[in-house]
Image 1 (tube, one colour):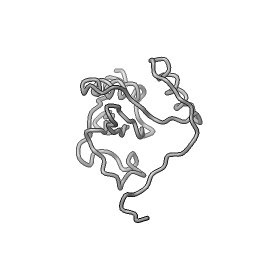
Image 2 (cartoon, rainbow, N blue to C red):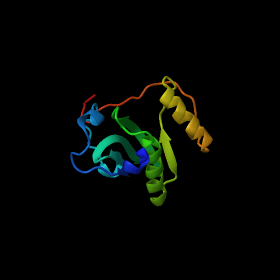
Image 3 (cartoon, rainbow, N blue to C red):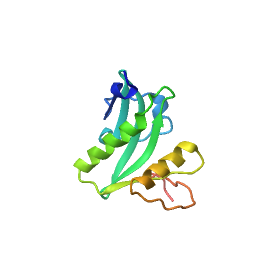
Image 4 (cartoon, helix red, strand yellow):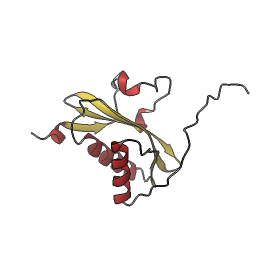
Length: 133
């Protein structure tokens, strides 16, 4: 049996995502309508956190457990992009760095499928709204 035949991509159930995939995002209010998981053999193995941004899918964080099955990322991206086309979203956007082979592979996939890459240098910046200045 192929690894891909055991993969299901869907939105997660309440408290279904392992804490190791949420690490660093525990305090955030994660909207399950914009979170997708890969389930293999009945257990969550990977997740993609997203947000809608003016008709564009903003892919914020992709995480996977070491035992995620081969082909999980392709199955996830195909499913998520199909869902977003049904919602009549205009496109997708994400931030990548070229420091690791998996990120460079994602860049090549995006370029081959008609997307574009705009090199930039900088940092992610964030702050709390409940802080007084």
